Length: 475
Ligand SMILES: *Cc1c(COP(=O)(O)O)cnc(C)c1O
Image (tube, rainbow, N blue to C red):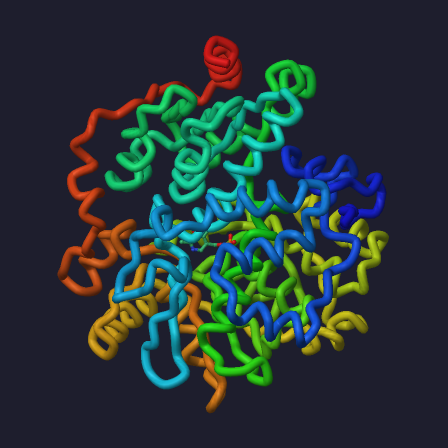
């Protein structure tokens, strides 16, 4: 399997070659040159597999440059009931991403039972093991530089802690994350993890990462890498739980299902789109946004209009607060018939901060064939949905999953399972849970009181040179 760029001007690469990089050299995103097609007999055989075995079957179609036995070992050590042990609602941890039936054909699928209680662990834990393996083989090392407003940074740190040849420098906005999120990251004592709290906003931290990454000489000399949401391996890892959710919600492979996906950067639902392209019987992909509705607007109107910082709201489902969706280019590549010239033209506009409009094109007429539906949710919807789920199902939802359920309920089809992806646990968003329910969310026992553990963080001004100097002194 080789990988091509959505903009058409990069040499095809193998999986391990794109694993450690970010964008393709032409500014596009990598995608497989074609999607592996899963036959009915393969689907029938896969229905019986454990999560780790299913993950191996799926990933081995995309990763053809790691020997099968090695890939199998990496996947097996990633997807264990020990790592994904934080099941709530009576979920079966051996299933890794178990379903909870809310009522009738309505389910949630628990993707947030990993170490940081958010779905990003599903992919990031695999990335940690893949990075270590490939770096060991090549005798190389990497220094991951990132900026986080919460979930991504902690998922990256828990995936990379203790890994050979990997160091993590994670910038976070000083004082802007919840006490629980700060404790999750800053209480790590591993010598390869460096937390830097920047006195500013998330955007200031993000700008520093961009400035350092744009310094090609520094980047090469200090082997600066990233684990952001455009990383192809993260998307690939997320394909697996759509298959697992489908098998758990149906009796036979004649049935069709819908998935509702709380969306921000379009990584999670992009994996669902690819699962559907591979032949998984998904009738509908229901995309849910919060107040930051750039994606909902596209699926309703055909207009993609990235927002600027001033137009981006800070909401109670903060991991979906995006101004543009970094993985969206992958979907548009497929929508326009995989024509890189069309994608390049569209993103020439996006990169200038302009909108594009597909509503009058043949591509837009073809959109229904891709199975997408969309909707949005606001703070009051979120609060009402958390109350509704607690009252009616006795299930406590986090704020992002509540956005997903709200839009799912608007799009139910009689007789068809609707699976709402649970992207985080309510313990991460205590303040909004208190507002909705007047109660404290339950935490896994081992996380009670983590706010009192010693913290390992340096506070720095948003100064690019000072942060470069810090990296130089610690690599
Ligand atoms: C990252 C995240 C999302 C958004 O996922 P995308 O892949 O960016 O669309 C939704 N919910 C939670 C809790 C997240 O951490």
